[in-house]
Amino acid sequence: MASANLEDVSNEALMNEMMRRMRCATKPEKRVILIGPPGCGKGTQSPVIKEQHCLCHLATGDMLRAAVAAQTPLGVMAKQAMDKGELVTDDLVVGIIDEALHRPACSKGFILDGFPRTVGQAQKLDEMLAKRGEKLDKVLNFKIADSILEERITGRWIHPASGRSYHTKFAPPKRPGIDDITGEKLIQRKDDNATVLKSRLEAFHKQTSPVINYYERKGLVATLHAEKAPEVVTKEIEKALDLSKSSHQEKPKSLRNW
Ligand code: AP5
Ligand code: MG
Image (cartoon, rainbow, N blue to C red; front, side):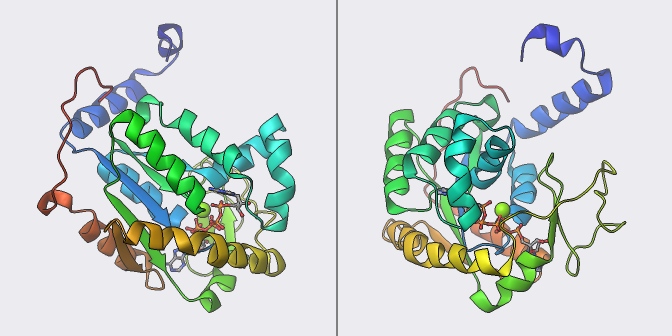
């Protein structure tokens, strides 16, 4: 961030950010992938993991939706596939992840939510990380029966600016249709209907399930009971990410942003 911009930030916000960075300074690096079908809870659990472990949250679905809304060339290319519940091409998403990994916020590691979704994307990620001298720590497999997902998907409401998500039955906002924090309107995603869900699930089983096998062969997968209540899933994640007993070695840090 340029110093001119920092002058516009309030003292309170600046102090909060400094406190957060001090708290984060002692946290070990972590690189985590979340894999699971639509509605399994990736977006619900990501902010909790992000806050706890000081990681950046890179959700390819959110990034693509922002590009569609802004009508960028990337968004124009992605829109048709997304509306139909199909995957966009590997090249498009690999490019946005490669760029995002350079962000200062990712210096402690990352949560990849919705990427990689094909074995080709997983291989590209391996190449990107090898170039950076980094390794994955864990792949969280959100295992859940398809039959549970329609109710979750059709009842979801989101706050587009922050990515906060609600559910009419499981996580209702304080006021229907209104974000708890900002008071702004919630929306439903265009692909959150029963018809498009069918294609999204088909894409998951055909193209993304093999990615779980890919990481199983590397011994990185922890399988969660994603049908359970969110708090129970959070506890399972914490257990899976307690890497202190594993062989994970912290890399020496020099001039990092934390
Ligand atoms: P993306 O945005 O990634 O969608 P998705 O994978 O289909 O996953 P969702 O965001 O729908 O589900 P979630 O797991 O985040 O669920 P959430 O936590 O919100 O991708 C969209 C599209 O972009 C794709 O179809 C594709 O076209 C494209 N795309 C993206 N990445 C791509 C890639 N790498 N390659 C190619 N194309 C790509 O939870 C859902 C609801 O359930 C919420 O309302 C929540 O409150 C509720 N809930 C959550 N957990 C629980 C629980 N434990 N109990 C009860 N309710 C719960
Ligand atoms: Mg999501």
